[in-house]
Amino acid sequence: MNRFNHLLEKMSASIKPEIDKFQEYYLNSMLTDVKLINSVVRYIAKRKGKQFRPRLCILSAKICGEVNENTYKAASLVEMIHVATLIHDDVVDDSNLRRGWPSVNRIWKNKVSILVGDYLFSTALSKMYDIDDRDALKVLSDTAKRLSQGEIMQVESAIKKNLSEEDYLKMIKDKTSSLISASTLLGAISSTHEKSKRDALYKFGEKLGTMFQIKDDLIDITGLDREVGKPTMFDLKKNILTLPIIHIISQQTKSDKKSFISNLKYLSKKNNKKEIKKLIIDLGGIEYSEQKISEISNSAIKDLSYFSDSDTKSALILAINFNMKRRY
Figure 1: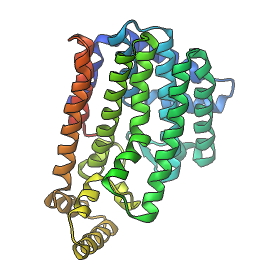
Figure 2: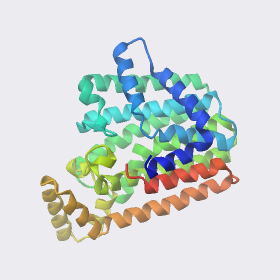
Figure 3: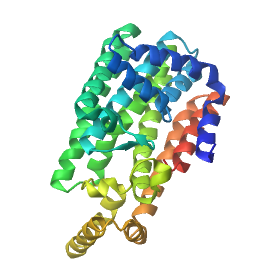
């Protein structure tokens, strides 16, 4: 087990029985009478990835009270929605790898991938009513809307090739933070009616989601293909502006900006990852993004100060440490 997986397991040590119960609930929620769907679902379940969001949902429920049936339902829904977005992303991005394995669209082609992604979305939406909680329903419906807005905003920014840091942060809050904050908030909703606890965990989840996406953007530049499980430097090839690049551009004169973008395009065309990485490091893009992650991390830890010290609180703080140190 590598040290990043060790951190993830350490974060989940206090909820291992709950994770096992979630796994069973999650798989049963996705299975159907259609053999093709079941084949794809079982393939996805075998290569389940970090399942970061359900872990956060269960921990959030536990820090507020008791993990219960609604917690498992909410954890399953957020993971279903997350996996559906990944399947659709791989189709849009024409990606052949996901977590080091052939992507769903590579095996079953785009048509089946899109339909299975739609199936997971619609299943998640239909199962929202099983939770039978108005607050939870509102969170899930708002999250579905925010996810779509964030994805479309990213496509728009790639077309315009222009994005401020403020707009970037808004985009990733919709694209990534929305589902992570939904995970922490739904966990809280499933086990407490106390507004202050729900608010604290929502704020924590929003910040954790923001730093999670910034870390993803850094990994795309500094990571190794074999560790990440898919090709790196993908964002640059697709003209997707991320924080390291946005920061560099914002610090330059008009002529320097032109020269930098031209150089970046040239190196990207040549697939010279080593020189691209060096250029972004030398111009301070990586350092600035790491500082931003550190600032947001400290703020997220403060949000947890509302709760008394416990193994569960320590586990949520470990989620921050995992994000800061991960390489995939």
